[in-house]
Length: 409
Image (cartoon, rainbow, N blue to C red; front, side, top):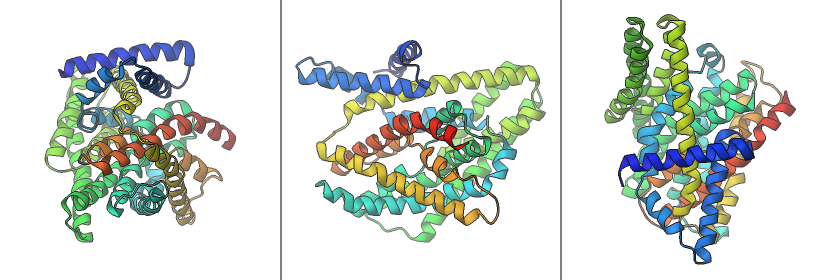
């Protein structure tokens, strides 16, 4: 199947689902789209059980398109840049310590807490995964998903300080999470041990290298933007920055996500203020908002349909239900520890821990990382458990976080 056909199908489904959600469900856009696509997927499964085989055609279509590749090597760069454009650097600087702790040490601690608990919890439902694979699940589920989080914050009306903490953490913790995941995957698949120095070197190369590359690429784009006053040319420059910058960073074995976030922050702050006219700012914001909304619609519809190709078992489903409180408990511990350790530097609101815990959504990136695990029984279990956690996170946490915020402010 051609890439054009795949894109056409997903955009048509996303458009129809958006219409149905707008007219009838009236849920936040991304959540409504996922509810509709998930409901259609479950209906297909039920029809398959009674002899109406529509599911096999959908399975064949979904299997022909690599979700992980499409998200990690395509859609993610656009979504991260669009999100970073809206972040105020001054707000980010005020929250830098809590964001830094949660995005680095928080991810590592969460990986081992979740992995260790799940190693024993899985045995309760008759599943026996090697400890390294349990840690692998911990690594892919620990980072909060920037796409899901940023989509949530559009409708949550969170206080500015809380929104900055949640958004900032989600934009930066993927770099650390991916490094930990890659390291553990190498141990699980290759069987070779990796020392702390190797992990730190990889982290420095990926994360710090991504920061430096993002600053350099963003500054070059800033100089080009400053030299022209034509919104079409300037939009094209930012588009080239995202596509070319992400691809080049990845080819240099640097963190493409972190590079694009840093470049987006630079363009969205210094570039917006010093290199653009008001006319250009309007068109640039409109363009990237449309890109953000369209890709979000496609992504959340896609997540809803991914259930059709999962090798679900009853045991894996119950393991996913067990994983939900485990993941939330690890998140609660990390947020509480980070807030308590930083109270001597700044004051936090009484409900900051609750909001940061419940607002740390998991999304498509976790599923994409799970799909990158080599085919086998361990992959099937991890993918199924990950999907249950992601669906709960987006639907339950996403639908209730606004109420929690209203009660807290």
